[in-house]
Image (cartoon, rainbow, N blue to C red):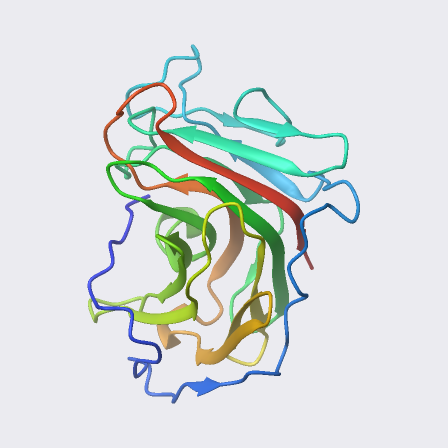
Length: 259
């Protein structure tokens, strides 16, 4: 899938192309405060596939990235510690999917649903441990709908240089909208996010880190209401070239659930 780059400055709330106003909700649908230890081992049972930064021969190059189905642990790309936390590793300049310039280690949900008409929620608590050098940005969550097989991401949650943003695409040729959820969150610092489809044509996008919280309710693009959708989460790092064996994205999730 093609990565949609930031095309506007992150200045907070922007008007929705769909024509529905955006409302900041500091207390609505709050995410849990971030923690540094997994409350319980994270299960992979609700995740259909794991996209890897290598091909089926284990080579970190080309446009034929392997997908493990069902998703499972595989070192060094996805590991689980004794406390149940998941660590994702994706090197820069490795294998990609045909429509992307960026390698990833990312879980794809097994739960497909009609976007904008059913309630579905993705919750996570995590910390970014390493950013790619050529572009210090990692997409840590996506909501897909439309495109071939419902594969196009129209919601993308990105961490870049200590800030957490959300992009909501219009589903048309109109520009995407951008929302700032968190600022001043350094590496190795825990934060939480929530992407909630409220089932009534709106999404709630929220995040928290320490005492910092932010939440927005926005419209599902009209052209995508009812389209087949699904979540993905993990380490979709945005580096394009390798600066060495340790260059890439590394993210640790201490909580990851969808409902």
